[in-house]
Length: 334
Image (tube, rainbow, N blue to C red; front, side, top):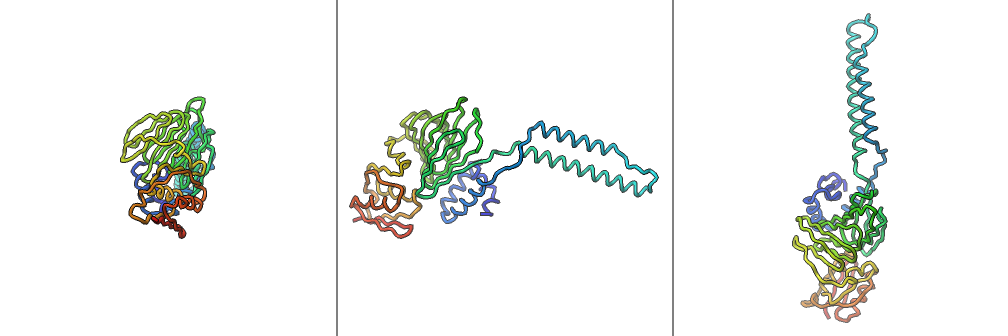
């Protein structure tokens, strides 16, 4: 964890400040699942940092600066007393005055630097993380509500001012119900591949490895991709981001957002896709055993708050057999 915290590119990934670093670390995390725990430790540590110093205004800093500089000028104008002292003593005293003046000047620079850091330091951020199989609901600073799906993380600044952008950074999946503000402040969800820009609306966002999409339930949304592509959405639209482009698909809205009710809705969904969903929801390894088993389809609404119950519901279709050992699941063709 210490190595991660000392890596500038990792910090750029965490604070979402450099696109290249974000893509590099997302790929690295995907390629090294055994290190995900250390990455999460580092992220949790960064999110726990708070700034307790009092915030000073520019006027207060300017006033302190003037006071220090006036004192420095006063010391420079003073002369050591006792002119009848030996020349060496007088010289040493003058040197001492110069050193003292230099230290005061250095102190003034340090105070100004600290003051500027306090005034211009970024706002404290808050984060919310869900474990595998967990769904959380949380209120944001403006009263908007977010429901966060399993193995997902959101980060946002703790203080939002009406008239300025409300920004959230998402990795995983979440459903947002955004409140409108008197000044119609923009609400922006940043993901690895695109930004979702709204004022007040309801929408679902997915930003996972190899999977990125947006479903608009209510209101209006503007998508802005990393490649500069802009696309406006209307209620009912479902857009997937694939191969650096946005593509519209027809889906059942209830199927996409069923996870909020701790359910999974399948409509002739291939078993290969079902296996991928189980893996991302619960972090387990799923093996399909059989030449054509991945092409078999599943339909129905199944519980998603308990992995064992979900597997039993799948097995009840009598199309295949499911064997689970610890974190490995085998789905065997009958």
